[in-house]
Length: 332
Ligand SMILES: NC(=O)c1cc2c(=O)c3cc(F)ccc3oc2nc1N
Image (cartoon, rainbow, N blue to C red; front, side, top):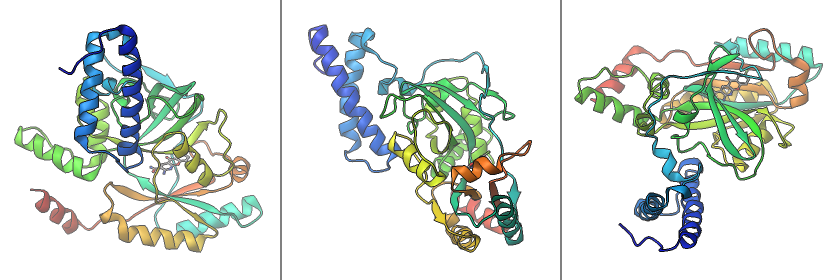
């Protein structure tokens, strides 16, 4: 037990100081992937804050790092209605599909358009709501109109900010996923405990977010990449590429491999590049998402009943069976 400040005033001041410092270290580690201190420095400060909060429970705040460990047993997940529909993407499976998509877009837009290309993270789509900078609600996509409220579980996901860098009200969407190495470690643990193993990281992430014991979710090392702004609030981006940078500036984790392509040939080159690089990435991707970059074009093209006309997901062909077997042999 570290020396706890004797007065409430000292404890209040010290707790605030520790919270700010710990949240900064946590942002560097889990969001920016650029830690600046060793774990033992974080752990010592964390223990100091935890001791103060034990002594003075009224000092616990919703954005305290001690709230990340979970510990609530939920009865179930309430339903959430998405004010802004959460669509899925139309898929493309060949070079021809991608060039046909570009032809349709150019015809509808009446001109050549630029595309923002992103890796298609193989996880679970989530929607995050913030009011005055504070995380207030997290939900699954569900059927696009009604999803499940998984706020308490998402609070334990370290890359999801409990408080934004600006006190703004926005709704953003992205992917919650389990890194490949965490998936291998989890399945090893489950195998040793005689439990069923997960077939892939996506199922492991989905299964983790369905846990009713939030302390279990906290141990699953889930992460996120955010990629859509549903309710802009005061955000000013006019293109998808800028929106990704703005999401990062206000505190979200975004994928660094994005590329702004001036034409479909550059898009196809990007697809081939990451089809090659896929196995080196520390997370699973199942393709590439291609979006018209200008929001004015997206507004012009709009949505069909099920998907945006201004985007397409190119799906990589399934890997040959022997590759998967080799991977399994390696993990055992
Ligand atoms: N899995 C992904 O990495 C990913 C998924 C989507 C979507 O599902 C998606 C769905 C829409 F209706 C519109 C944009 C989208 O953008 C997206 N961007 C991504 N990078």
